[in-house]
Amino acid sequence: KCIPCEAGTPPLEESKINELLKEIPTWTLKDGHLFKKFKFKNFVEAMNFVNKVAEIAEQEQHHPNFSVHYNRVEIELFTHAIKGLSENDFIVAAKIDKIN
Figure 1 (cartoon, rainbow, N blue to C red):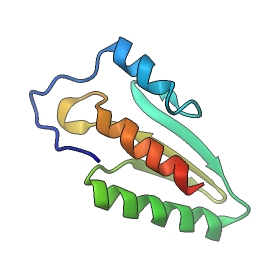
Figure 2 (figure 1 turned 180 degrees about the horizontal axis):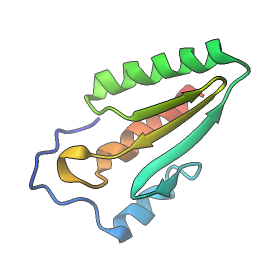
Figure 3 (figure 1 turned 180 degrees about the vertical axis):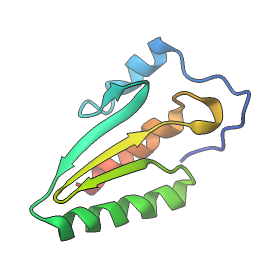
């Protein structure tokens, strides 16, 4: 479960990020953000997936950035309040992986 992050909380250190990445091996780092591409049969399936991710994001109060390209969805996770990655990003990524 995500816990609120406040400005001033330090982002995760590189060693902790590398440790947590092992728990979500299909995600990568892109410009300091967690990143993953998903592919679906069509636009409707892609949007159904986005809506399921939105439900998780609302439950966790931790919201990813989405990019939809017809049947592909790209997701980036980053904790804006601390300008870096937090454990919340990894929690949401793991929950997103359970959808697919």
